[in-house]
Amino acid sequence: MENFEEYDDPILYDKENDPYTADIPFLLKWAAKTEGTIIDVACGTGRATIPLAKNGHKLIGVDVHNGMLAEAKRKTDKLNLPIEWIEQDCAELNLNVVNVNPKVDHVAHVKVDHPFVTSNMFL
Image (cartoon, rainbow, N blue to C red):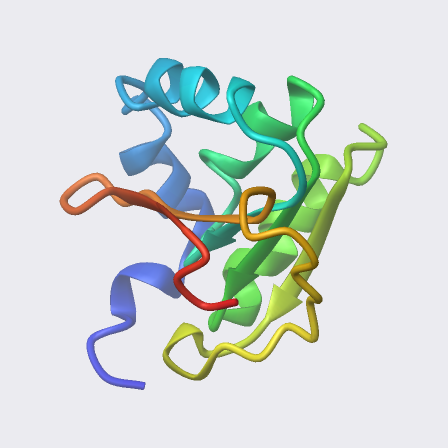
């Protein structure tokens, strides 16, 4: 992995990124119009994943960095949220997810400097 130093400290990452919440209302509005599982690609510590799950959406959070996922899992351990955390390189995404209806599964990648939301990109 190259240039992943900023992800080596999930607590510091959260301190730097958790204050950014401007995208959450947009994501919640978008998610309210969807059905099925939402895949958060490069989910990090769950900054966007957790609020979506708290609003009743089923999610798969995918990230290549074990430390980020460990922090995401720690933050949600006792919340009983519908999130499956998967350690995987998003460039080679292989989730073994069956998409029986092309209108129900969605992919979201939200990073402060380049957010995107799309349907069926990897399915």
